[in-house]
Length: 378
Image (cartoon, rainbow, N blue to C red; front, side, top):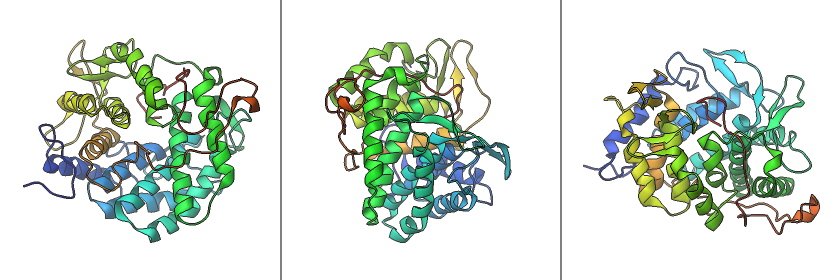
């Protein structure tokens, strides 16, 4: 019998399947509330939040709230978190701006799922500090450096995938602020500038278009939608999609990865292309284990799992696709983002590029860019 509160996709995943997957994530959760990549693995804030979102979508709200409380307790005074923590010890103190911003998506998602305003109010100061930390790394043109160093200064280039994800985070942060009656007009401007640069300034980002995330993240993050998004997805479909298996992480290596496959499915769902989204979810089920967990990837050239680990964030991506396609939880539209603020409309005159109005949904697909340098998520 179908569980009414748990996502299910007919012919692909039952509600019991999805719940089993959620329980593998919960089983990896540490007593502190942190959710590592796998038991004994490291924690990063982005994948931790993605896993918490999956727990919320599957109805494991207590476990999800433990994950968010961990972030509230461990936030540093400047609003950031270390990029890598293992068993409570910092292994990499660098603050990745995208990792820090993603909390806003998780908190808004959990509030949508649960309608718990007290939770939202408790988490708001943590979200606000994180977003301010991130926006301090934004340039006048609009892109955001991928990291800030120990001295707090922006470090390194801007990354397209990370900035596209931050675009979504800012929209969720603004939705949370508006809901709580604490509007942030400055963030509206910053979001408009970021959306403009994502749509019109490929030169702002370090080019690494070998990576599939650079291809679909401007769509998933909401900066590019409509016909430009359809053209963007069609333009490199053959480069990344391996029929029957999923999608490549990078275009020149013979492996497919489950999380990237699911994120492309979520991107297609934002465009109303639900049939192909469901097809991708079905294609990557060869990564599923009997307990409901998912292997990270598969090298189809020699038929081997690689890397040899089952990651919580891969399982989380599966649950979020199932929820989006089934329209089950009240947070199922978090990536379609139809009700999220779009930011202040910005025209090209502010940076001299001559492009037209660029706030909200974009009018061009002139973006290039970068994705992660490993299987680690944006």
